[in-house]
Length: 393
Image (cartoon, rainbow, N blue to C red; front, side, top):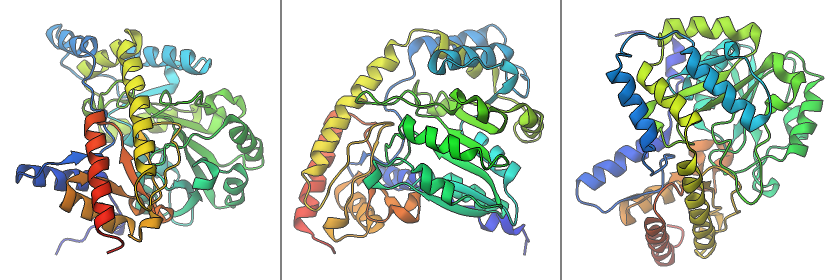
């Protein structure tokens, strides 16, 4: 028998991929599936971005790149950061990575060990807790509550910090809830963090441009007092419909930069060159496709909220960001994961049960409206028929 270290037994997973696999299997067997489970834009990567990668290949960019990314790519990220936040960042603080998860992994393994505590949002992206447990650190959930608009509470967050806290993970706009934490709450948190100077912060900003109804993302980069302990996660996947390109970036404080560089050398060497040229084209090129995509998401969001609130036993707060709704299904009498499974198997609608996003996710489902309006309306009709014919099995 092979004996692996105990940390590997603690690794969880992202159940959206398990649901995707089951939905794909059912589809292959002939069942009509509408997938509202996966967090992936249903739009094509814009043509000018694809062409930039093709040109890079034809121009001979086939070799290794620096572990931290091409300078030109990091400079593009610095320009984009200045445009979106008003903050000037050196390219020497930026790392290009194969997606967003490597930043989570890197930050968590830097600070996670037995005896340490790491705070993370709950409900939240499941990989946070999975990686915290992998390191042997204690995961401490920061509640994200519906009655608070699915924004985190500064006071509650600060109350959870102890002398063992090493890292605080924040996410706004948020997955799975679509919540956006307002600037006033973030300012209160930043003020309180002055009393905890040894706590690092990982800010997951992957949905930073995806806000609605006049809401705006408040970047922690705009608080210079945090800069020496702030790690920012971002990337191309959501904004430019580039999930399969595996392209992310992160911004690091000076004292951690060489650590992430060495980890890159050891783990993934570098990010492929053609994708980095595509990333430059995405940032510096026309943003018409991004604007059109966001307008479509906004229209779908309205359809989703109206449709969910019309379902028996279901209520849904209006999401202010990302492309997720997090309806409350406690009035249906169903447990969330059991309902999600039944909807997939019996109606062909793929959703994710709230408990897959944390202990506070019971009573909720996550619905991704990164699908066509026609499919969303059809899915809602199937859900309505199912809930009316089967109460609380």
